[in-house]
Length: 112
Length: 120
Image 1: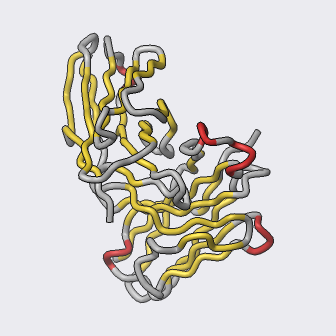
Image 2: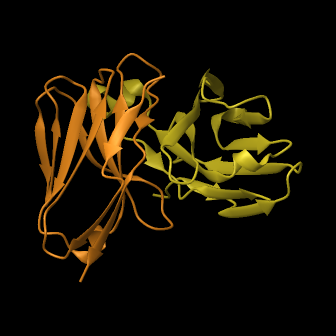
Image 3: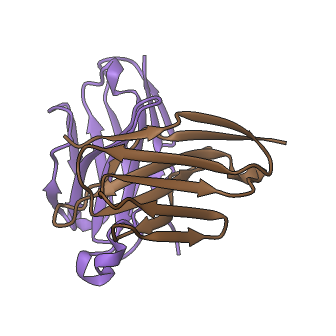
C-alpha cells in the first residue's frame, strides 16, 4: 500500500522560532493535506493543497504541494505555545474512495 | 452545529473480551470513515461508509472487526474477540458527499476526538 514518510518524528523548539516539517512518498498523490491534533482531540484540517506546486498560507502556517506530487512541507513561523500538538500530513488520490493515507505525525513541543 | 462524537472516550478490556465503539457523524454527512492510530504510528484507514453502504473496507485488519451503519446515521465498530494488538485510538470522521462538497473539498474530513482502546 501507499506510505508517507513524515519527518521529523518530534521537535522541541523555543517560542518564536520557525518550524519546518515534511512528508515524502514513493507514490503520487493528487491532494496533500495537513492536520493538527491537539491533546485529547481529533485531528483538525489546517491546510489543503490540490495542485502540484501550490503554495498556500493560513496565518502563520505555509504549506506547499511538491512539483513531483510526491512530497509536501509545512512551515510554521514565529511559533507560540498553542502550536503544541501532533501534525499529520495526509495524501489522497482522486478517483479513489477518498480514503486518506496519513504520515506517522510530528510531535511539536514549544518551550517558553 | 455538533461535531463528530465518539463513545466511549476510553475503554480498557481484557484480551478475548468484546468492545463496541460508537460514532455519531455530523448531521447531513453521508460519508463516514473509521481510522485507527496505534501508538506512535500513522493514522490508518479502516473503512468508509456512504450512507449505510460499505464503500471500502480494505483497511479492516481481520474478521474480528465488524462495522455497521444502520440507517445511514450513526456507526458502530465492534471488536470481538479483542487482542493485544488492537490497542490504539480509533477515530471516526465524516464528510459531505462528493457532489455536495466538490472536488476541492475532498480532504475535509471532520474527526471525532477518538476512542482509546486498551487491551490488557
